[in-house]
Image (cartoon, rainbow, N blue to C red; front, side, top):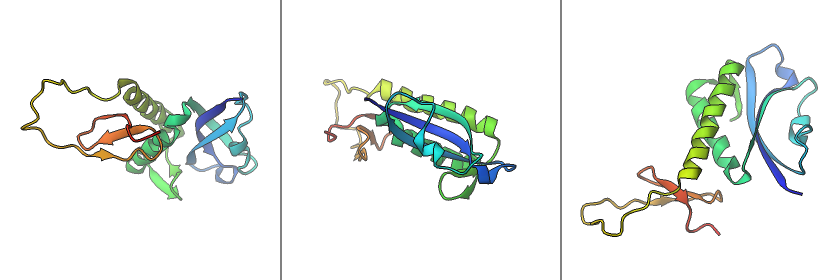
Length: 149
C-alpha cells in the first residue's frame, strides 16, 4: 500500500454558521480518499470544503506555506490552523500556494556555470530542509538538499 498525502480545508461542526475554517494535512495508508481518517476525527457535522492530494515529501512545506500566507491575509481564529474568512477565496488561495510549491520542486536549484568568477559573489548559506529534502539558500534559490539522505 502507498501513502496518500493531503492538504484539507474543513469547517468543524462546532463552527457551523461562522466563517471559521481549518487548514491541515494528513497522510494515510491505502488508496481510498473517500474516508480520510483524520477528518473523520472532527466534530459531527464537519464539512470538508476541499482535499488536495500532494506528494508526501512536499506536504509539510505546503502546509507551512499556506499558514504563513493565511496569517497575512485572514484572521487567525485559534491555534495556528483555524482562520476566519471567505471559504471560496481560501480555496483559490490554497490552489495558488500549492502550485507555487510544486513549481519550486520542479525547477530545482539554479546551476552555477563552472566558469563563473566567484570573486565578487556573496556567500549563500543553505537553510535546513527539516526533513523535506529541499534546501533553501538565503538568496531565495532552492533545490534538492545535499544533506538529506
